[in-house]
Image 1 (cartoon, rainbow, N blue to C red):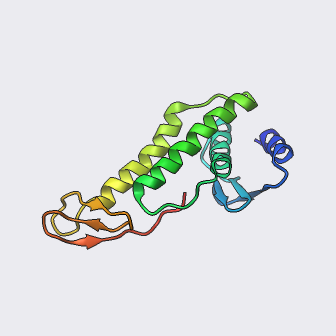
Image 2 (cartoon, rainbow, N blue to C red):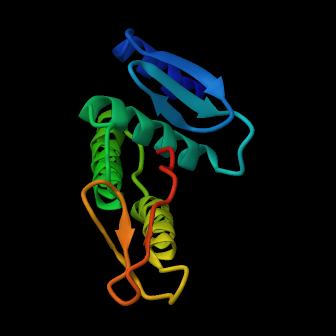
Length: 143
């Protein structure tokens, strides 16, 4: 992991790459990596490249769940390219598991609290139930 961090610091001197509680890109230029984690070294490197992917694609703003999922998928695609560049193995199953966690969360939050029917989300992020006309919104999740 330290070897990759050194390579990234050299390749992207404008980034502040720091140890933190979790893997995260914080605009405009902070890249955090977790030091106390249950992930293997290969998984940790992949997560770091995924967060770098967020920086490189330049997309951080979203209003709907599907927009966030698209951003996450693009960051994973960029991580796949970066794996080739840095000679690392891309673990497709690991990446899909991370994307599945978003999909599962979005499904759960789309369920109407009154009747459990899946609602639809408008372009402002509000959910609407077509059966009972309830409206709700969940908190934005960090990516």
